[in-house]
Image (cartoon, rainbow, N blue to C red; front, side, top):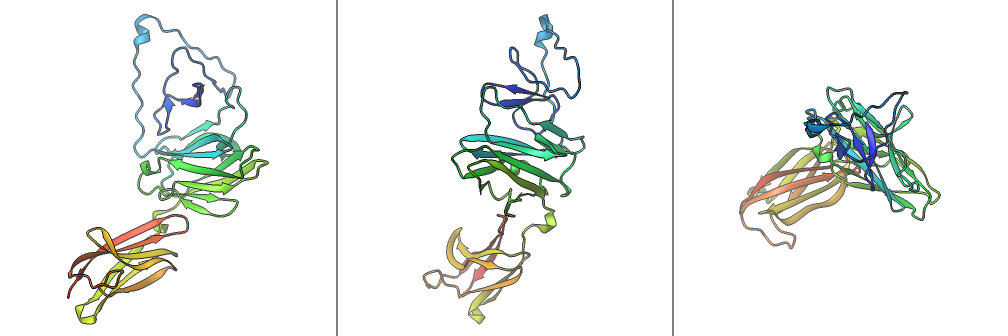
Length: 303
């Protein structure tokens, strides 16, 4: 591979099909590139002549199930990024970090550290089994700011079953990348290296709401909504009519794992009896890492 400076940012030049964003598959005419050689070699670039210059390149197809996530950080008005992901069935791809921009002062850097080496991109052979982790370093230079923000893109393009979580190794805080978009953390004005880890959660450990059941009715004077949450979370329970909230039965209450119950007397938030008809009860749970689970079931109000 090669890094090409386009005047504003580095662009990766790589010939094989990958899920990496902003990849050039050829060196444009009349442009320069930094080429990193792992061993002494001779690089030959034949000059195309005549019709040979009209050769068209067919873009390589990205393997099925391949995915990537771009992690970006911003601090002191500078931005850095690194990419993690998977190339199922392939041998993976590790891209070394590019040099500093020509003539520029050092800014914030985001690198994936693997075997002690800083990488700009690290695509593993197959990461959907949940066993892979990526060690991330955000290298912040000295500056006037006392915080930095890390955010991510393209998580929605990853296949189902890929559930990445960002772990702040300084504080232990966690962010579920599918349901959150950014994380701000404290930094020193003297600069420093801040370490994170991206883990893939197995599907069985995700936050879930199960066993939602509505019982009771006209003869008992009220309805009982019961459900089970498999982990501690903040829980909300609302009654909706035609998509509009008419009653909040539970407002962002912290609940531990287990069976929960709440009752409804058929009235709205103002205490006014609602007309008979079909309604929806929505149960929403939010974990401390940002995971969100939501289940809605119908309820028929009789008078």
